[in-house]
View 1 (cartoon, rainbow, N blue to C red):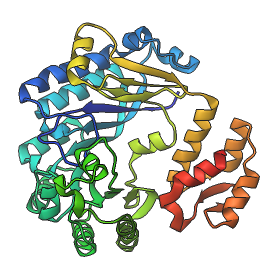
View 2 (view 1 turned 180 degrees about the vertical axis):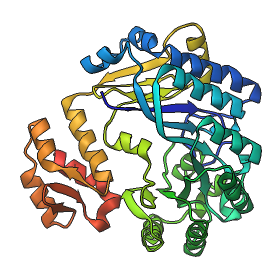
View 3 (view 1 turned 120 degrees about the horizontal axis):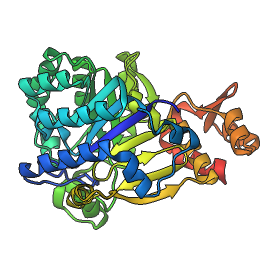
View 4 (view 1 turned 135 degrees about the vertical axis):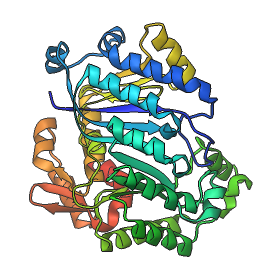
Length: 394
């Protein structure tokens, strides 16, 4: 059994961004400690809880159940987990150390710029957190305000030196292409300011429009709230993405996944587990897990999650065995998101499929590239990965 990644979900925010379609909420700080206690209990009792939820592990995992399973990456996401008192985050990491064989290479905490304080950052580093994923989103105050973000440009510039002084040597910035009121000029300004601050890692996400967010629903209904009529066009968003590719490459960042760039040695070890279909365990409300053969998820509602764990019951609300067809689709979808591509002979061998003719046709159409046994999306086709996968599975 390989080393696991662990994800801890903290579904609390100070405010709800207009574009957010996650299951997060704004609650009183008094609910933070009971939630963290429930997460600690779920971690310590996870084996029994999973058995009770009829989650089946592979034979190798069953053999390892009596031992401390090795964990090398931890990701604390949300929500805004940096809202929690450092002691609560420390408690959850201590629960992991007690339960697993922890040889952590990467421990990430998602944080919003306005929540960064020197004392908190020092305590994060002391607890073992060595990577901060900063919810930057934009360097333009008008865009941040229209999206419902609480931080402003000056908070980003204030936060980075605090993190550096605390000993955090791995910082990731998020940017969103397609925010309301965003223009080509303001997008380029954000990119150049990001490069100037020189984080080790960058994620660039294209704005999603769906009914799961207030902004998305407003756009779909033709309304005006949340600056719904001030969104860039799809063509402009595509141009913004290409701007990011060019500027980040020139600044020494290597793109290793559709939405992610890193300086040498700083690709996200934890997220690579997802894209490579490696096993991971999720703890907390709405957290997902994958054993290699099954996927399961905890109930999204934080209060329901705490009630279940406090009563000694599993919080898992959905357990799904991954079929061979689903596994193949995941291999192609997740593999082609990575710029390294997929090992075609391995996939054909493991899934008893022959994709040679389809690969040849897509390569002739300039959709994909073949480099020996590796197949990857063509450089200019990263934004249409779904269409390529549909053709491979057709």
